[in-house]
Length: 128
Image 1 (cartoon, rainbow, N blue to C red):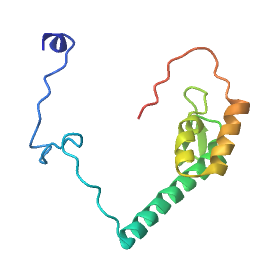
Image 2 (image 1 turned 45 degrees about the vertical axis):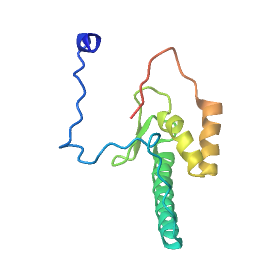
Image 3 (image 1 turned 120 degrees about the horizontal axis):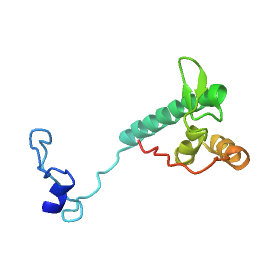
Image 4 (image 1 turned 180 degrees about the vertical axis):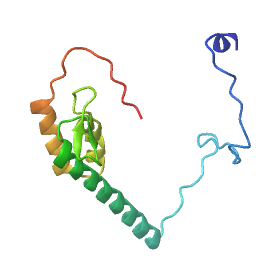
């Protein structure tokens, strides 16, 4: 495609060495969902609990040492800022909600309501 080449994109090629599994399109080839056994449900719940506990640990460290700063420097136990926006709080809202960490979510929401005051206009790309 000449338009794609003019902006520097290479043609996309399916690399079977890097991707040894066949391509599968779930729309054209629907497959039944796997069944869940009691044992696998217990393992999944245990894994979910471990992830929530890890998030709780990380959130406590941030709240104790860097609340309102953009990020936590864990080894130095201090807050760092690049934009002065409390980005960890902003970026964590959806995660806290989805993990059911409502006390933490409400603390973050209250900080946004009372403390979030962006200065000026700037572009901040935080997609990771």
